Image (cartoon, rainbow, N blue to C red; front, top):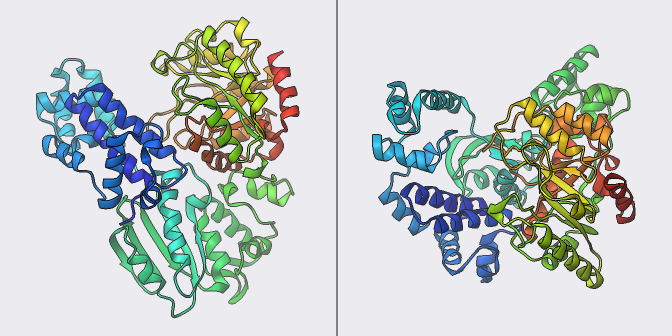
Length: 575
């Protein structure tokens, strides 16, 4: 049985949720949450480490007890401690935590006071007006729960791209090893690099006698075979992810790949272009009357309608067809274009490694420079740096830079933007840094006007360099706060500062549409990992996905520059 990091993290998250509902020691709850975060940030599969007998206690936040649980999960697919919790509390209580506005304390209150164990019971109680009777709820909260339940019912289950990748790539590799298989491509929204994925479409070309269908439906992670034929099959993995496999003829592979990559709106426009030329375009090829004129490659499909090949990430019907026709397609940024990372954390605040370890990990990731940007003092929960500790860290960076080879550390801070737009540290210390990364970490509920003005005031500060994770969203967890992003982008242009594309898979913030708007307004983007551990630099791949969807080229990204050129940009901003 294959077990992925996301499976392990999900178990730890569920244990933390149930323990918090149960009222367990907060430190115990936090240990499981930190372990889940640590597992998700790893660049390697824990199952491989267990198979090799590696010491898991060397991983950040993993002690002997958690290491033993990881081994148990890898070897058995489950955790005895979680099963024990399920005997003490209904497993369905965790489903309630997915309803916006219901944290562990409120779920416990609902369970203890009203005996609510399921989403259905919650809906019935809310409709009957029973929630408003509980302390701390009231009519408004009850209505918000009803609204959230209505939205919850209509939501399609989606997976973070980074999570889908854990299941998609091993499955694709299994199919590539199958006898007689020639080509395997994961299409759909996954190929377009969408932030979240609803399901997977895999296209295969194979010899007639290939057992690829049996390899697919017999995969050990398949929980249910929905349908299976000679050229198409649909399965549900244990993770809940639906996967469709299609075996297509080699001569139709390009047409099928274009069709199943999508998006639907893009495909419709391509078919219309074909109709104008008397062509019929579908997943089987490009046809002139009954004769096939293209379809073996994607390039041939585009050529048939007079266009160059359009990169998959751009196929959203957002002007890419017009740009292709007019020769204006961007030359999209690639991972190797990045020279450094301007947002990272160490164990001085909430990171999991020291500066030297982070520097060496960045160098191993192919980077030439790394900004150390620990949190400022306002974020007390992570022991943020005050003026004295930041100055001490700056001295340590100077000492390290004398001994490090192949990587240079830059002095920075992720300074909190306070509610009134002030920065959390005085000018006398900010002025001595290489860069200042400003971030909103509280008061997410401000009106759009107040939130926007707050951010604009911070950006006007003479030592402000980069606005971190500009919308504050957490994908599938927390909506972006209300902010006038076009106005923020325009202010960045006028002020000469930068916006971040945070590559952490839960954030991917800026989103693709605002990345493109920033590009059009001449505002440079910094693609950063916000790494809290040495494995975090692997997340740059997700930032590149998002940047490509945002039409970004190499020159649009601040940290594609050499260190000497970067310093000139930073000095101009900090001047």
